[in-house]
Length: 233
Image 1 (cartoon, rainbow, N blue to C red):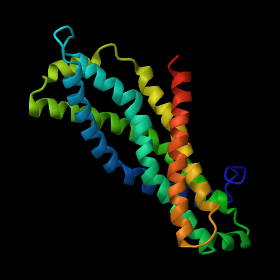
Image 2 (cartoon, helix red, strand yellow; image 1 turned 30 degrees about the vertical axis):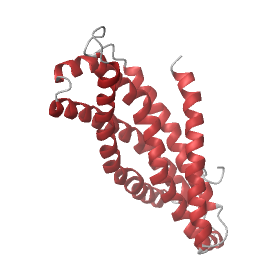
Image 3 (cartoon, rainbow, N blue to C red; image 1 turned 45 degrees about the vertical axis):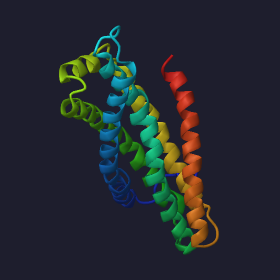
Image 4 (tube, rainbow, N blue to C red; image 1 turned 90 degrees about the vertical axis):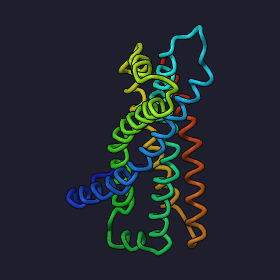
């Protein structure tokens, strides 16, 4: 980490790499985030309607429960678990391939801080992009809930809107974003570590990609418990 967070030798080159990683890790992840969040929002709405529907409960409770699940857990924690499979394996395989083909060794011989050049832009780009992905995920999930309510008629848009607005707290949005920042650092740094330290050939690169996804998932779940306890007190 000391080598990674050193001052870049060329700010122009760092900024160029940062924009490249911003597009590759962040922008390219937007479609899968929108798709998964849309359908998960629809499924959550259906499940809440089927499981908590009661004459003793107001109809807007479905929208309220859908909002809480999307904001507090799915759009930050579960979405980052999904991204750890896509983004994490991508980072590990890219850096691991450079390691086994001795491109990193060539950088070191030329006096380039390879850890800073390869890893630092990935960490900063993913941390910068993750709040946008969280907001997109929340929006797509809510859109999915509205879509399933309108096309199936299980609940009216007015009831869903009332539930979404009921006792809304902006702090929940900030909690989701804060947690996602930690998760983004875990994904990028752990995946980069596995790729940077791989030894052997292409088989080891594939194994390192698998190990990085597993490690990222476990660390995200552990961090989720700690951060939720700290932020929601």
